Structure formats: C-alpha cells, structure tokens
Image (cartoon, rainbow, N blue to C red; front, side):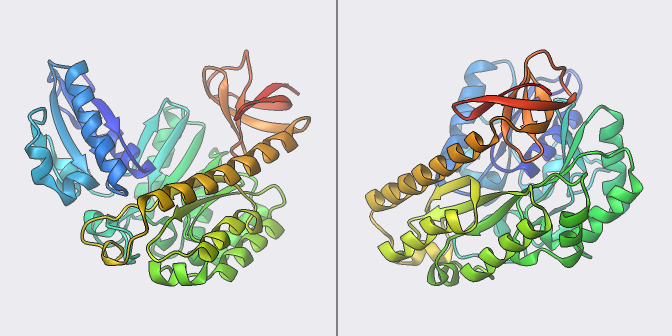
Length: 388
C-alpha cells in the first residue's frame, strides 16, 4: 500500500512526497503531511490539513514533515492527531534507514508531468524568509542521479519533466549547463520545464537555451518579490528593479513566445505608497502574465519580522490591488491567444497547459497526449481548444 500524502508549498515538496509515499511500510496505513513554512498562512493550512486527514482517515497514522515541522517540531508533536514528526534533514529516513539521499531525485505526478529535484537548500538570506533555516545550505544533486531520475520518469510515462528545488539557479556548475547536458543525454525528453528562477542568477548557457532550444518550455517564473529598489534592498535581494526589467527584455528578445510569471510581496515593512506603486508598475514593465501575490507575513526569527510593520488592513489592500491588476493583465493575455494555434500537453480530464503555460481544455484528448490545438474562446481562466 502506498501511503496517502497531503502536500503543501513548493514543487520540491511534491517530489519528496512521492518518494516518501513509496518508502512507507507495506500494509501500514499512513498519511504523510509535507508542510510549508513560507508564510504564516502556509503553517495554518498545514495544521488544517492534519486535522482534515485525521477526520478522513481515522484508521491511519499521521506523519508530519517538511519546513514547518523542521522549524517548530514541538508545535506539531503537541497536536493529538500527529503520530510522528520528522524534519527535512531526516525526512527520507522517516520509515527507517534508506539509500535514498537528500535531495530527492524525482516524484511522478499523475504519470504525465514529473517534478525532478536538482538541489535543495539556499545560501541566501532574504530578510523575509526562513526557508534557509528549514532547508539548510544549497546542495546540488550530481548530474548522473538527475539524468537517471529523468530517464526513469520518462520510461514510466511522464511527458514533461519539471526541474525543481529551493534555488535551482544556484545549481553547481550552472543551471544552463545542467539543462544542456540533460537534453543531450536524453533525446527522447521532448518537454523540459523550469520551476522558479532567481533572475539575477540566470547564466549565459541558460540564455543560449532560451534562444535556441524548442524542447525547453517558454514559460519562466521569476522570483522578483518587489519592484522598488529600496524594498529590494531591505529584503536583501541581489537584483535591482532595472535588473529585473533588463533580464525580462533579454528573455523576450531571445525567445519571442516567452511568457513571464513572478512572485511579488505586498506590504513589506516600511513600504510606502510610492514603493507599492513601483511594484504595481512592474507587472507591466516585466509583462507578467502569471503573478503569485503574497501579502507580507512576518516569519518568526527573520530580520523583516523586527522591522516596523504596516497595518494589516494596508497589507491586505495592497495585496488585493496587486492581484486585481495581475488578474486583468492575465485576462488580456488569455484573450490575445484566442484564434491562435498552441501546442498543448493534456494532463488529465481533457485539461492541460500550453507550452507557454496557459491553462486549456480540449475535449476528446487522452492524458499525456501532446496536441496541436486552436484556441476557440476563453472561459474564465481557462482556454477552450479544438484540434488544429
């Protein structure tokens, strides 16, 4: 019996959850809750997931792991629903010693799209973030392990590989070279996608791939966080606003069909209205069509938690304004795709994503099929397609 999982947070957690589920003892009912600590809301949702799992599976034992469990294990051990708490450093030995080493090579998702971890941990110290404490320093998986994991997932039926980690652009030797080596070693790998990128760390080899490698999917999600130089400095980010705009311009020049996603924090401590407006304008300046907006959440023990905080209402209002603007930009982008031809990976139930990561529905297509489709219309945040 493969254990049930409840995964919160990043794609690295999803990869690790799949491996943990396979390592669970046969015949023992377990629910693995892989937690997130990126915001206070993520920690709250972890507790909620634990209670929900206990109600749904009263016969099962509950194991809690992940970043929230690493940072505050006592709080989760105190929950009556929880049977075992294991931090990130020992999560792959949660059910006894194993020869699987952190970081986890891969985790298959629905036999169509596979998240393959290439590194874990982070060497940076952004003032709002506690993940470096939960994950430790950056550690890269050796190329043979990544290559073999990708090959194994492709052989098991994956149509797309997504490289993931905490900070994949810090990969030893460069993320671009890693991608080049993978694509050369695996000619049957037809769709390679990247998870969140630290824009200032994008190397020249990766820019070369942007320009000339059709197997690299053209959606790039950037960890921008703010559009104001003072906010970026107080966040201890390593890029400026001008850097972000310049890098997006370079991506777009290299790859005409590139689409841009971004993480942005609203209401960071000391943020003025003018500073908030600069982040709002960044959506246009960087042509962001897939924004993840986070209202600032002070994480215990971080420098930002000790800075002068904004009123909760101000933070909420600024996050809502950013989300509204991002939603309007996304709607315009989806509308612009109506009437165009797009290549679509069907991920299940007739739904999937285009190469540029537009969400689509195409009836009558099989899961795992890659379809040339014509976009007929938009239905909310979903594009309705017909075969081209």
